Image (cartoon, rainbow, N blue to C red):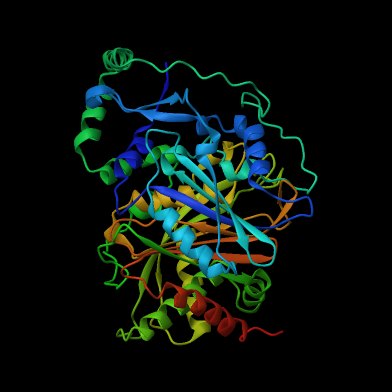
Length: 479
């Protein structure tokens, strides 16, 4: 019998709308090795390792009449060249041109008749660099057994290495033979059999078909292991903000790179955590962004951010992000009122640190303990889990999403090409024109700003304001 989508995964499938495509993305920039890094080499690499992510050769099939949730079936016509594509930037290959390309790619929904992922090799970036852009639907990220396609192409060394997996997982060299697609009658028979043996399933399927998908997500949030526990306690609506407007089908994207050591210096000077510094930096950037728009900013003005965090548990790291995975990782969600009205950078930092400390001490944020069992984690996977949290919570509770995922602090490689930078692309929720994702990697902190094209024409300025806000905080810490 084919695997059936969980209620949570099915809800993300139903939430996929023209203005809110439910895919999470990433942009990785590589330096070309002398041996080259071309499309044929990438195809060969993907083909040799896609066995590690069997879901990436499966597509979704609806059950007639929605008698049950959809199922995963093997794509008997799977064509890796359909999913792995190539593009090129016009000379001189600026990063602005790359951002424009990413925005166009992320605006387009995935093809639901095929496996729900795409990867683009983008050539022509200045300085002998290439970019790898990935798109993966959130229905594929179940939070327990997920490994992102972008993870399996990465190695700890330029020479590559042998992949090993947990017992029971597929191996890279395992021969794949697609199972025959089940008939509609078979799907109906399986659904009826399940409903007879478990009558609650029929009720759930009927509710899924008529109820708003966001309600479904909230109802079944328990399968994410407590991902939404912090948000359930929130009762106050989010402050009024220019970020919360009807959004279009098109996007803008911007990237900003910063130095991890600057955040560490601020933390040493003022206490708190690296994430506290990140949120204080974003609060300062949003403050100046509001002022640049002529908005009224009073000392009490706030913006509420939903902050899904990757939290390291007690277990020690047993492998790199490109290796066997991290044990002890958890996801915790926070609602944080960013003090954008506070003009003093240090006081903003203290406000944020105090709010985050209260969350942690109150126990309102409960980690997703099920994630401890994950056999391999990459930042795109964790950003996807954060995006699931954002879309599963009543959107009136927060103004924007800030997804911060720590990555490995050593270089990673794909087909011998060194990865220089990695930027997340967090999807927008309905009525929210900005989502901020950031990943720390090899001494850098890389921001990806995904924004609505119509209402956020100045998203590039916001990226510059993040750099200025960090510099303002850094100036308060001794050199």
